[in-house]
Image 1 (spheres, rainbow, N blue to C red):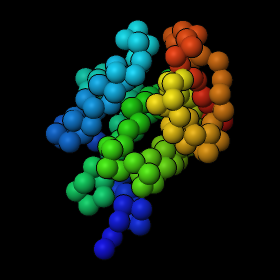
Image 2: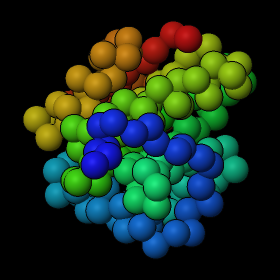
Image 3: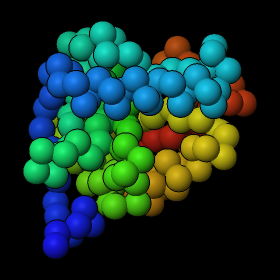
Image 4: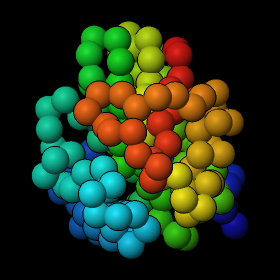
Length: 159
């Protein structure tokens, strides 16, 4: 029997029209609002993820959605990771690592010199922070329009 930890994901650009992708993003937003004060939620809804500056990826194993991740072009040399999420049944399967590795390669291929991200500072976000650290991201100051906020952690990776 093949398990999620043994099979590579098929990761491709997604148009955000599939029901399972929309459900995963709605779950993501619900968790963000349940975990963080409303003014500190920086996750994007489906409509905002359709911004032309954002490339959205879905990772599937056969036909099963194993996660998503997006990258927003901030400039010719900087990108921001957005909406990284795996469904509960895909956690600790390596899906998140594959999605993050894909976006790092995509960013390098696109000529980015730096990847940035914002994530929560609460315990709920600890697995995400550990994943980012394992990929060489380091904590940094707020960037762009983000305020300095004790509910947020900011990270960067020089490519």
